Image (cartoon, rainbow, N blue to C red; front, side, top):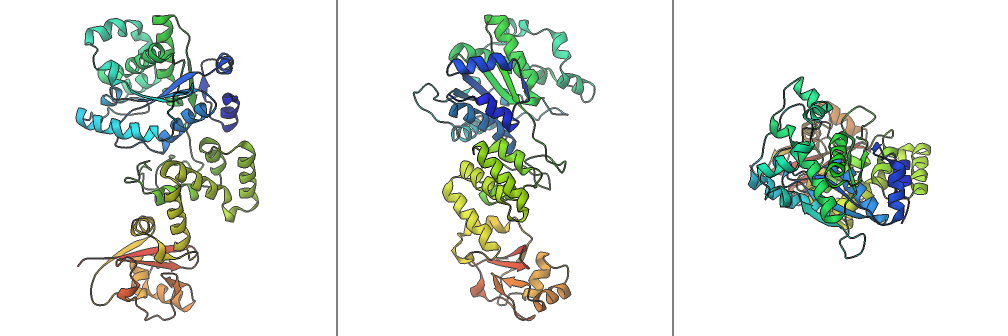
Length: 426
């Protein structure tokens, strides 16, 4: 058993707690069962969910027993926390499919065994589904004073703007019942979540006290913000970084971490990395001493990509990242990885034909150069590359044999500006 709370505090991962001293004593006394819930509101979890998944993993590594709860019931409603408008309700069939996907994603990060810290996965539909509306109102609803529910910040904000349906108003009852059921079935004494979940978590603690006379705890992590003011886990265009490799390629996932702002990387390392304190502090120092080398970003990108997508996939994306910038062989990259890599850079499409456009045309079409005259200057100055080979002539044009996997070309201007070309069927 290690002091998990000290580690979480150093990492900045404790936002709120019901009673830290009491919780510390409880954790020190032996394995504690804790849970965190994940609603299937999309076909995949995303980077924001990763903080909560890894928090469960940290507790398990410290000797405690995690429960990953997938919201088969709550996912049919949607948590109003942090939402300015009512969610669109998904069909039962859709949510059921997402439940299985989310269950698989969370399971990858936990260890399942018969030991005292062996993980468990559950769905709250198991106990919510068989319950009648009368049972729910009598056994759960009677413990929730309406005046207290109306005083919740989430409710007040929505009532003052777009309003809130009874469905979303009741979400806190369902999440509180989850904590009560896990307390009864598994002896669960701690629920974790993001700080925007604090009201839901403490409502569950209060329900356990009211119904069972028991004592339970809640612990939240802070919401992660980026130094530049943009939302964590989103692309510049507002798209989400997913954990599913079909929705966000491992290459794009790796690039998210490698491109982390120097101002953010220390916090990212503390929130996500499992490296010990000394290693993180050393990486941060390396980043401060030699920022151009991006040592902390590279370490974080490799660790996170390995954790989410596996060592083999990480090796492929690292090789692709290096090859695109002239530090490896483009010919050795598999087609899927190369396609994913080129999807992250300026890219042009040209129809197949007997003759491919000149490099000048391709540099301009891809956006690496603003004009053909600028492309000619880049070639004349020795700063233009085709498949990592320097382009010597303004009239140079790729041959069909230059196409990687029969469809791709890699362009580069200088050391850092990379673009791609895909030859498509005409």
